[in-house]
Image (cartoon, rainbow, N blue to C red; front, top):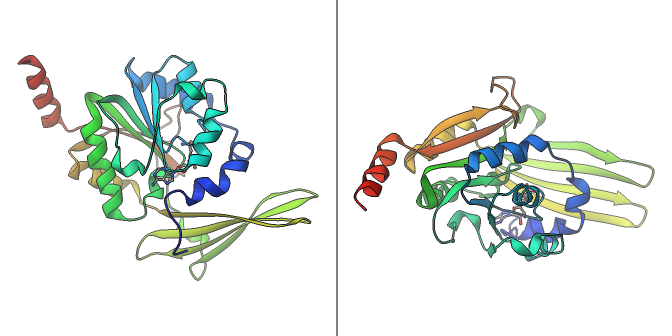
Length: 256
Ligand SMILES: C[S@@+](CC[C@H](N)C(=O)[O-])C[C@H]1O[C@@H](n2cnc3c(N)ncnc32)[C@H](O)[C@@H]1O
């Protein structure tokens, strides 16, 4: 997948995204609202506003960044979608103004940054935009390489009388990348929805956070704050400014 770009996923999937991924746990919104502490929130890779819209409707001031015009157009077409400011671009740049009490990236999308360098750059830019007591939230899966055999995997997804979806994946363990095609087969033809990602385990995320001057505050197994364990298949990780940075920021605020 050498021609895969930062907007490829969104441009190809925008038409079906909300049908495929309509469901979410209400606790996602409740917990994000709590983490925003009454301040403003920024969603990296906001997409069609699956979570940003209910979060905004719960009273949080939300902004977003996304690379795909097609995904943003879907967001805009929904009630309240025109009230969320969205910057078009690569979310690793975090190219927005001011500071946010909450910056978050959901649904494994941090892994859409395809190199360690790009992921670390994102952490550093987030640290710049996070208010002194703010939280950076990452929702991501725990990599499970046991599903690959010979660095390949094929899984049957949704299936009914009229269609079958196959997920065909290739693993590059050196670069920690997975290239995937959601292949939808119907009597009318074949549709391909590519997705490429660089997976990381929580320990590497924590190290990138440290290099960016952040530290892990919480790690939960789900949005209801269940304890994270060796059996967890995903994690919700919340990073905050490292202690010395919090103290520095507090001192700067005292002398203003
Ligand atoms: C799985 S969707 C998640 C959308 C939304 N956050 C949600 O939870 O429903 C991934 C989104 O990330 C966007 N995206 C992927 N890579 C990106 C990048 N490097 N910069 C900005 N947006 C990106 C895609 O356009 C798409 O909207």
